[in-house]
Length: 100
Image (cartoon, rainbow, N blue to C red; front, side, top):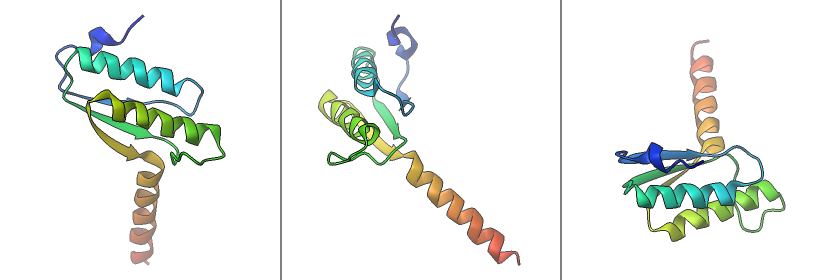
């Protein structure tokens, strides 16, 4: 099974992978399919803080997946869902405090 046909005619795509083993392989397959389908832009949504020196296998694997996208030659936008969610939750807290 391949995702390649799903990317035909798509100009932009979002890659989100759960915090599970296999992200490096999935990233490589996705990047190759996106290149073959001439997808112009990919948004990679990381769910953990990705760092090379991380003690967590999940964080290291997400960092490695980001490197795969870097090497792919695709135009990539990296976003960290946990960082985005902290901003959203902080904003909700701020607005709820302003109501009182």
